[in-house]
Image (cartoon, rainbow, N blue to C red; front, side, top):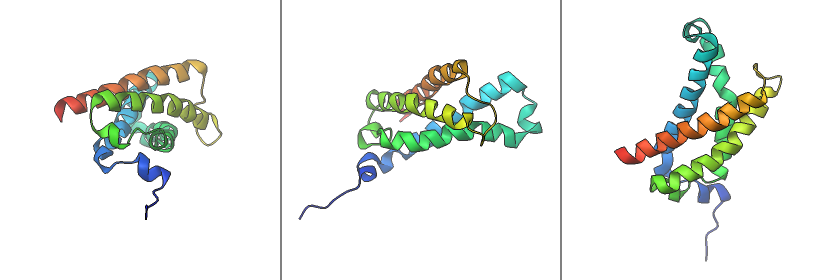
Length: 138
């Protein structure tokens, strides 16, 4: 008798956990650089809650999109050649979703088109770079 597996069980591999941790850190670092660019380094200590909340819409979006699109599937944990494209396709959708979440009244900051473009480009670079470095080390 065949066993049935859920969609997410097929999309998640425990071996990809280090990628997930690094992806979240890469997103948080990307947002931190932006926060510093717009508010200065002192903002990190004068408004740490604001600093952290700036990244929340993108981390929520990433957590929703990345597993569905296979960023943590069994193939993602094997090599940069498979992991990076899976992350890029996930990030392109997650960045837009994160901007939409940020645009809602729940978060400050809005989502101007230039901001969305910056998040798309620099987020793609950050996550791709992280995953490439990870596989060079491992």
